[in-house]
Length: 495
Image 1 (tube, helix red, strand yellow):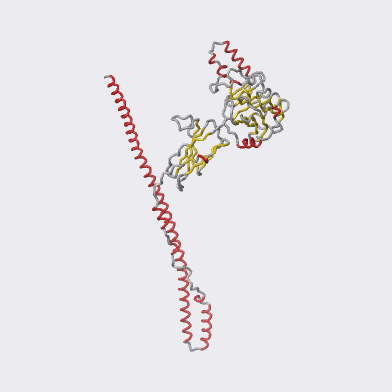
Image 2 (tube, rainbow, N blue to C red; image 1 turned 90 degrees about the vertical axis):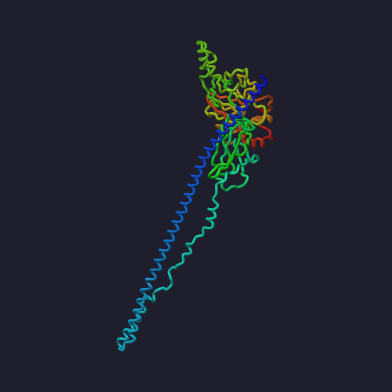
């Protein structure tokens, strides 16, 4: 009895689900019928509008051509009538002169005849009939106004509904990802002269496979592309991949999207570890500013906390130190930098590959340094003053200088001080290079052998800086590294 009830419950559940499925399908079909009615009315109205516009164009052309025919007829009528009138007057004058001449011939008086003959001769010489051109000024032909609409009629007879554009295919082998730009290229199965433009959509993702039901990032749209390729520039690669799709559009309708194509967008991405920062450094996301009152503020907050019964979990000091945006500290179990080590570290170690990032700094800072450090860098250690860190150091105290520092050794760099520095690390090759980020000019290279993971490190005193991550190694930097890889470094004394 119990098994039968359980079986019946399963059947009931199945039927209920099926009924729900059928109900949903019926709702969809009813909605489709309503949509069909609306869409049919819309396209019919569009068709009538287009034909009305076409009729209007034909009527305008007809009126213009009829007007030209009337103007040509009026012009020729005037010419012919003018010439006809002139000929009629000349003929009338000539007939009168002829009658006078005949009367003179019949005259019997010699003196009158001589004078009359002389007058008739002078009149004939000046007669309009002898000064009149008997060549027609125009013709009665209107053949130059004839038309032949055979070609146009064939074009009109070829009018039909616009087909839905074919689905493009993204040519993965032709796509390129470099220098934080992505060039996407696609093609149609067959050429289509009716294509007006393409719409490209892309989305950042950390998953290489098919899209999930819920993605972390929305689709971004680029509309109105006239060519079969497009380059996205100025990108920040803060995810592992980017997914692309494209569709073709004519004047009336858009086709289906292409198959999704996912391209790898490898770049070094990290944040600043606020938990490692000296108490005089104010860290906000990827920006750092020197705060001379930082230590005093925290001490005052701690004193205030001890004087109150406020919960430590919600104290101002704890809230400031444990921002919810901060990822877990890379210096687990270690204290923040202190004393004169005004340092802050990145939150991601480098233990393989080639990585690149840039830092923009205030050139008026009293002191600034950028480089790499080992995980065992001491909390009192300044960058470049031990064998656990390598850096470029800007000093604006008393006299401005730019030096490369490692293991408490320094080399003065003879190059202009840029406002943005690019940092390149090749872990396997043991290369740490610094570039003018704008010109990609090499400033200095450390060559060593990394025996343990390293981490981006920064230091500032009486100044500020901001870091840009999610960058690929620029082509110019890669070219520079290949050119210099076989040469010995002049900086070996610092490594």
